[in-house]
Length: 206
Image (cartoon, rainbow, N blue to C red):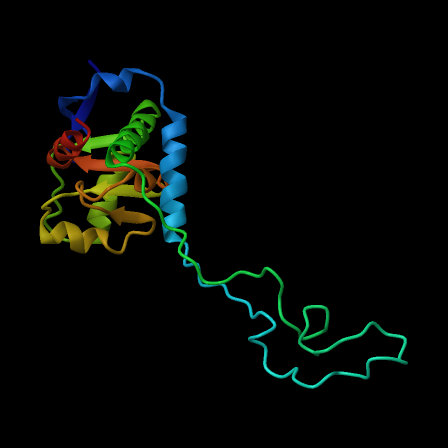
């Protein structure tokens, strides 16, 4: 059974967490792709809009006489063939969102965590403590744990000082373990979680 090493804020090993047996297998890229496409589609605003010929103002008068000009006949200056005319098959507001089954989303989250685990980018600590509440002290802890780049933190029920110390850190996001999804995991370089948060997260995967 694969195990995840647990460290303290000084960077010393304090124990391990048992991971699901599935973490020994290869990462299922297909289910991750399905989930990421869904999450990205759900983030689309879908507000692009164009006017069809009936929505463009003006155009009631025939632009020029029917015959004798040498031009193709036109009944309205707002025809899609004319400058300032309506748009043919242009975009209109729509909802791009859709959902996948809950079990598929859970599998995608598991595979995303597995990918981070196999790349040694899943870091677990026994607890996060920043008594001073200062950002420089929090950054020192991250440096000790060798956590850099875009970081996703799972700090459930953390102290107020931890929130104060981490909120100004660039490219550092905090998400609850009950809310995190595969997209959150994969859009960051590192996942940093407390032991309690990781145990809560693993229960979602079983």
